[in-house]
Structure formats: C-alpha cells, structure tokens
Length: 407
Image 1: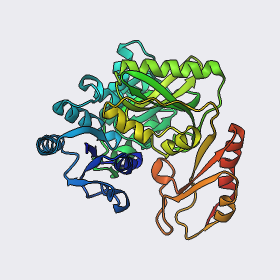
Image 2: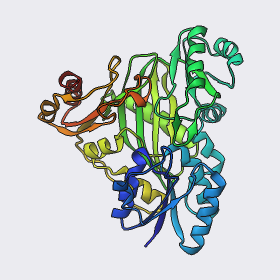
Image 3: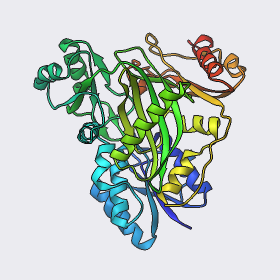
C-alpha cells in the first residue's frame, strides 16, 4: 500500500483524505491540531496515520517527512491548502518525488513574486507596487494610479482585498489590514501588501490540471462578487456562458501563465478578469479550488479533481474525457450587510423543493456574531443547485436570497 502525505488539509483539501482512502492509499496527515488548524474527526477517521506537528515550522516538517520516509517510504507529498504549496514542493524535492519546481514555486504562493515573474516574461499583469509600511502609500498611489486595489501578498479568501478611489480610502484600507488580529491557519496578517491598478471587467476562474507537462482544462467558471469596494466571492457557476472567441482567449492566456510559472503537475485554479485589452491575471494557485468548486465540477462534468490531484502527484498515467453534454452547477453564498446574529432560518423547505436542489450548508451557526461581508468570513450559508442550462442555473441561484430569511 502506497503512503501519501497531506500537509494540513483545509477547505477543499479536506476531501483529499477520504479520496486517498477510497483509492486504497495509506493517508498520512500532518497537522498542528491546534488553534484553527484542527481537523474534524469525521474527516480524520479516513487517515491511516496522523502526525501532530507545527505545520508552519518549515524545517521541522521537512525533517519529520525525511525521518518518516526512511521507515515508511512516501510515494507523494500533497499540500492540503495554498499556504503549504511551497513546503510540499521542498519535501518532494528532498525525497525525490514528483513535485512543483523549486525555482518557481514561490511565484505560485506570493502575489508580488507572481507579478514580477510574469512581467519578466512579457505576460500582461496589472500595474503594481509592493508596500511595506504606511509611509510608502502616497508614492505607490501615484505610481499605480486611482482607482487601485490593495491586497495582501500571501492570504486567501479575499481577506482585505479592497478598491480605493483616492489616497484617503487607501490609508483607511491599509490601516484596517495592519490592525486586524485575525489568524488564518496560524498565519498572521503582515504589513507587506500589493497595490495594483484596478481592472474593470467580468471575473472568471479557470480550473484544470497538468499531467506529464500537458495542460488539461476542465472548467471556465463564472464568479459572482459583492459590490465594490470589496471583492468577496458570493457565487460560482460551472460553466460560464461566453462567446467561443472570448473562451479561447481566456484559455490561451491561462496557458501562457501556467507555462511561465512552470506548473508541471497537479490542479490549478486561475482567477482573471476580462478587460478591454483581454484577459488579465488576478492570481493563480497550484492547488484545488475552494468554495466547493470541485463539487460543482464533478456534478457538471464528472471530473473528480480530488482524484486527479492525488494521481498526478503520484506520477500516474490516466485519461479523462469530458462529456459531450454537460450540466450546469452553481453555488450561492448568503451574506448580510445588516444582520448581526440570527436564531433561525425560514424558507429552507421551499428552497429544498426547488428542482435541481443539491445541498444547503450553514457556515455561521445561529447565535454567533456575523462578521461584515468584506471577506469569506462574512458568508452565513450556501446552497448548491444543478440545472440543464446556464439561464436555469442563474434563475435557481437568484431564488436563494428570495426565499431564505434569517431571523
């Protein structure tokens, strides 16, 4: 039985534990098992072994993997979340296993390095500048121009990504980021951020995987965002409905980004906007997409990205064929700009009786404080639907906020 290591699985990475078990592998989970890095037993029960270690202490994790490999040879090391993509690559390199190239892996994790690397290879990205402290805001604003977008270089979930129309708004946004005490998987916010030009246009993501150096596109996903100045994702539709020429342009651009950043194996999740001059990158990650997009893709076209990730990291050969006729799957996240708490949900039975209903989930339990909807933390609940057409899935998602009431 092959041993596969998962480093701190979270979000969609949680699904890799059971998938590895179902495929007949011995799944070894590295987890801190503390702070917000605690994995529920419902998922952890599928692991053959759990190694409790501070997954944010890079060298300690590498040393433990090497020690484990000597007694129980490891066949693959997978990142369970975006924060651990470089670490998984370094361990794979140490053990002589398939992994992302060390020379480019940091560009897949840190947005400032990503921008610099792509610019150097002639690939268009938003005009940008790195800011390390508040004294640099004015000059950065002048260089990038207004409106602009402030974003952390190394966080996920749209945390502190915001649009500023002028220097005053930029200073307020930067101060909010620097004073936020939120910790994400043991990672604290820091004052180093990216300031970049605002790109007007619809936003999409491209999902797929790389196998033996060959790029396979699986989904062109439409993203539904909150009104600006924030960019919180409150919905996704698989597949987006676009003219063929625009779809080709998006996929060609994504391919150039993937090749430039040397993504040589595993899944990718590329977020971009379609501007007047064409597609332009927001960011790309070499890991599974979050927000249940993996589940939407499986429902719409039958591709299991969890299985794909494990098999590509093992270096296995396989052939996936997308169906001729695909369905459309979508998710709607419920947010509120006024609600501080709720005690019950009305309309759930009506929602469940809508044709194509697949799943409903609560993200913020009754009685808990509801954060402002300026990042993923403010999403209260979600609903997933399946339909035979794009217009039908749009209509079903629109009904979520019409029938649900949080009292």
